[in-house]
Image (cartoon, rainbow, N blue to C red; front, side):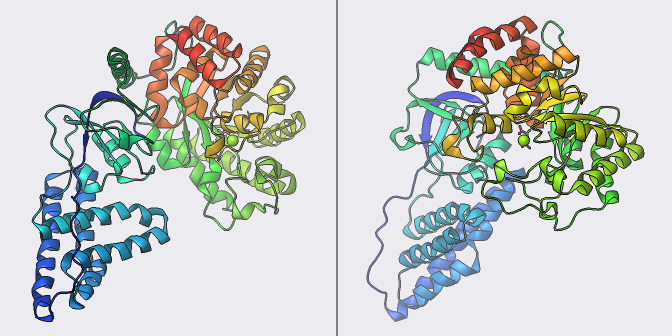
Length: 543
Ligand code: PEP
Ligand code: MG
């Protein structure tokens, strides 16, 4: 998905018409000429793609050049040649050779499987060339239009004019498909994996919402126009927002970045982020077999501290286990790792690992002069919080804990007796509150952070923080949703940490609403019974 909202007529890619695939073989004497015809057609297709690559820029140019290279790939050209030598007419040879490689790529899966579309696209272009038909592809619209297709080959999307093609929607496609990559580069909204798209014909008016990931055919025209205008206003406000985080009436809320290494931290400096609210240290070591030394860890942590010199940085200690196992953490075999020895629970079995990490953070602080806060993941009891806090203080660090387990939210006041701050991980808090695996697409409605039960626990933790006079942030995905961010502020959350890409939109939204509105939204949300009702209530209160 690429965010943005557009309302425009549909155009569709013209596909190769049914070409009769000849059944009989060709005479032996004619085969060299047929091979020559095939070679000329493949070369012509590759040349045209390369020409377009030369006239395009950035990712579009790379995609076109890669497709041109695939058009001249010896493996499939050789397979087609072999068939022609055995008597197959060129059109049949191309079809069969490409089918063979499509099967191979599909079996290999992953990124190779995503190249299947590219290969089929080349096949259609070569067959069109062999058959004297116009090259298949995207028609040039007269007015701004939304391009819909089952899938888009890179050669279709690369080089599109974003003034004329203002949105993309496909039935197939994953997050790494070329469609999404190109849409992001062109800055046009895009939704992939849309069901029912085949039924939407060329010329139909559609409302495409890349933020919500939806496409609505024949919507009410004035409502659609209003949705586009609202999205444009929000995009403009986000572009202009420069921080620091505050509501319209001046209630400050630090807007922070979630990062996973020095490079991400340096990139986050290009946003108005006021600091780092969550440094996921385990992500630095996912491919390591052995524990990094204290010195090595200190260098890595130091990079993040340096990137945000003079600013707040919250380092989370290793959250290993479950979906993020670390080879050197010594995870036991478990039937149910999400409820097993993960996060702070590893320290119980392997206290040296936590000690050495805290020592590394302390060393990084000495080297950089930026003294971070540290927090432990997956805290379930006040005793765990106390033990972590004692350790962290012994290394001269300010301790806090994550609130990701309902038990910790319920007893946040007891936990706050030991630590200086809380940071609510709404991803895991939703998983454990709703007893629904956060990795399961089938259960996404249950793990929705708008679930009122989850928000009630957020409210409890925030109230405990206010009573203790200690900060309570949110660093889960909930903080990246501008509307929900305003609700979190209304619930009493004092900072919001999110993927850097979400910072401008969240900051701009907060700047448009008052604390009073946020509080009213929070109160309304806590009075609902479903995630959908909660969203509606917030929309109404924050309009
Ligand atoms: C969370 O659970 O919300 C969180 C921020 O931690 P992670 O996503 O890394 O588990
Ligand atoms: Mg978590």
